[in-house]
Length: 409
Image (spheres, rainbow, N blue to C red):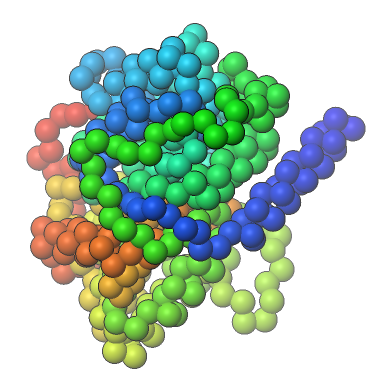
């Protein structure tokens, strides 16, 4: 009993430090950013791992090795990580293995990382009660990759996904602190201890990867981390500041008429919304009413246990907001927001109550007119390949060729 109490107190202390770090985040300087959406992501990951000079920190929600499909690109990630460790790169990985385990996700990700342990890669598991849904890779001291991609076949080979490489030492440092805090809340699985977590692989001033051959870098005015509970205020303020347009691309947006059962102990204040997702949806609808161009792109709800996206589409359509669905043959797993001509939010955060208020998520807000133009084209391409949202449903798996299955995200 005493050990359980001490563990809970230690967890509360570590969580308080994590919240303090989140509260201190603000717009940070950056030397540029590179979008690596859809199929560009996998090859960018390989270049980053192969180019790492001294350290890699990786946060994974899903990863899978496919013995029956040896040419699947995620299989090559394992070879690249082992080669990096063998040339002296300090590789640490945090994986999600909590109680939420759809379709054997935990078994797949542990099989994936266990293939790395004999090379000396350090593996950490998050806390059992947490869902660590972020998809982040930190390369040396200057590069941060934030994505919606999982390390699974459909995510890297078929889905609509978004990811961005940010060249910023302050952002890299911020996410390294986030990584360490989440590891402290979890448990080491292989080759890892609290001492190795805090150890630096080489002295300050060490040379690190700064350029990635073949990838175009766009200028950036600033970047702001939007992890965990930071996401809502960062996005809320950005949406309220928009003056021309708001584009929202989401796999799922869930609106609530009451607080979810998972928060049954919460005592609501008078007038408190059921979820912050409701507030952002209302801000978007009000922006349309004020004359901004607002577009919402939703996935077609394949394999969803509920009609959440249909209900959300109805909310926006009834208020005159344009709502689109993606191509019926493609899952849109992206989580992004485009504001005016200069701001884009990219990351792992679904517009759901658990993502906003419970889970571990990682997104970034980037201010860059040049980058915004790339993502404007990305949104336009999804809309052109899709259609106006219809409240009838159809599965994307109709007439789909055989391929390795992925767990639900």
